[in-house]
Length: 187
Image 1 (cartoon, rainbow, N blue to C red):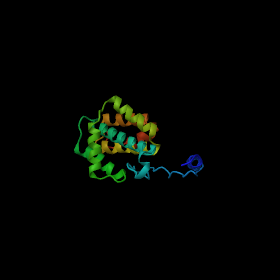
Image 2: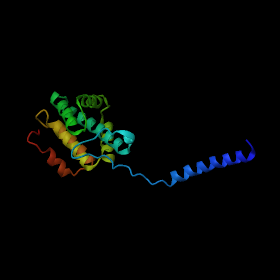
Image 3: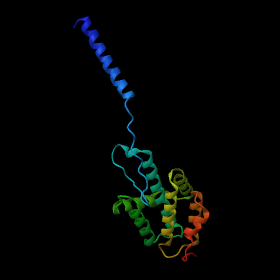
Image 4: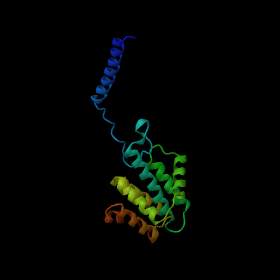
């Protein structure tokens, strides 16, 4: 190749690079699809495709994990975990998590019972839900706690105190929390 051919080849490569850069820079933005949200009282734990690591999925997963941890803590609040309480958590997952099946529900419950449960863990769970969860999600979690507390037929004092603490720390109106847990089965 002579010098002119080399110069032309180099200029073509540079020109192609500039053209690619310019078209990428000036390409119209493709809007992202709207984030998947809870529809009614459903949680969508999984999304397909490239948006699999989207912040809203991370938030939903965090809320889901913390909801199960709080439900497990509620089940333990009266000193014993009844089959009815475990079943209430399982049924709530099946009813409120889009695409959840028995295996998913059992895995979520196992992980909830395996997680460290103490005051610091509960406070961290509440803080996570308050930070990334919507008000609808926080109310749904309190409904889950009421459902678990009612499962054995009696809402014990410790269960009531736990629900009040969770509701208040999640930023829910205390009167609304009281209305949700004011049931005839209370001790």
